[in-house]
Image 1 (cartoon, rainbow, N blue to C red):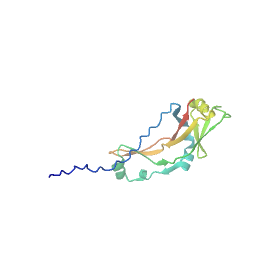
Image 2: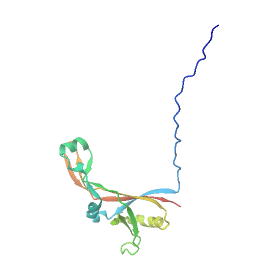
Image 3: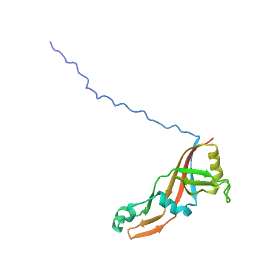
Image 4: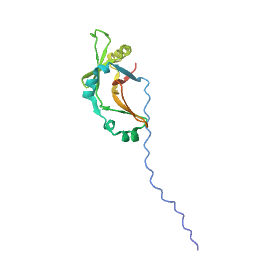
Length: 166
């Protein structure tokens, strides 16, 4: 009598659980806006003193700068993250809609005049979800194969605000 061995199924590796894809719901009532900050050129010394760190790459020898940064700008300063604060200035003699911008309690400029009415409306309705301050610019070296040019630009800042739109 012949016996046939039952064919066994290969043992499968246990399946790894697959995490469900999390899709952020689109919230049509949220808006992200960027506001340029005016007057930072008058506050450059304070901005550098309080928020700038020297970028070590700026002081590299020319040969190393060319090898690592050809075709790029290497700025003298890296700017630290600062907590922004907006303070309306209704008593401002030049603009009663003025909004001063502070970083960690130090005034760095003003929201540009054309944006203040809209932003005051957002502030009054307490619709702000988050704010981020970006500071950049200042002395830099432009690195070319032929050489390195030292240049200067004003330090500038912008404020990115996420808010509810009703």
